[in-house]
Image (cartoon, rainbow, N blue to C red; front, top):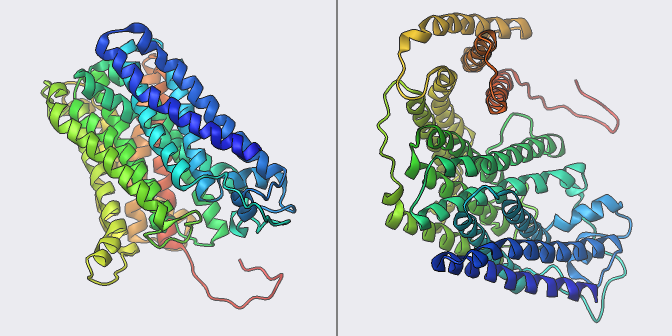
Length: 522
């Protein structure tokens, strides 16, 4: 009976999600505080129902209930218990249930931790998140139920989990990645709430930015962990394979990075309002696109482990509905939240705008390279392959000016500033960068590659200016906020990443060797 309870809980969750989508919005329209406050109650009920259904599925895996088709297809009695738990999200149905569980968790978190936010904004935000939950719950109930039975005949042993997935990476990588994907729904919901209310100010950015940062951190951790897992599991080498599934997570990461910086401008200068809303819609839409690419199987990938082409079309339709509806709302009501601030050319917000444009251009390059083979084939023009040279050439070309602006941006004040104030610091940083970019490859390698020097110059420029600016602040006796140190850590992390890319791309060695069991190669 347990699987039937799980299915009943999902049905109940769908009903609660519908109520969450409608009732609080009705309360906003009527100005009824109690109706708006009901959104928090519905958020609790939604999470409890989905968490209960997820627990039922985990229980079925732990006790080897092979009367459940999903368990029989992805587990067996010899599988260690921690892999049985992780197998819950190892294939299509369970991974979607994990998505909805995390989505309901983010919804509950917004309800609990948004007490300083005006009640009408919270009601709108939770209603939008309820709509997204309802869409995915409908998909699970009608096409992807993880509780389908194998009765009356059922196997005494399961088919086992895919051997490639029997790795600690399965325990952490998908939940972290999904936490990032789903987390961007909060920024999306705040954007829709702002459009519905016709109001967007610095307080909006102050409310939305922590949620966006949390989602970005989770997505970053998921990508890093997935890269490490793929490196030893699939033996790729290199630094990025430009595989469609990799790109599916990289695109929302780029859009999310742009969104974080845009929210900073909205919070500090009340600028970039319409741009911030558009980025919020774009980031979550790219998360839905990534889910479609991974789940549908329309693109060939080396790690599409949970794809289903037929059911993937539902995700495509849902993505078109969410994205199209959001963009239509933006087109109709976006003018109400347009910024009235004129930005000086030499100001932090102008430099951040330049970085935003470069980040979104890089995202479009990745999007074009990922979807072009699919579009080309669907138009009957034959099969084509977009490989590493395309991505590396265009992406690297955009990252050079990006690194230049990234180093200078934190040194420039908000509003209007004068370049001569930081001229000496920039000259010192330039000399240090040129020296280090040649010295480091010479110290650690037997030759100096021109492209390695170029990559190291980008990394050193970012790192030197980040450290120099931090030292200046501390030496003046000012106490920077925690968010500042987070920015410094992120910029230094990017510098380390660029260093790794430069060395991997220019000094990696490939060899074909014949080996016997037990042999090793160094």
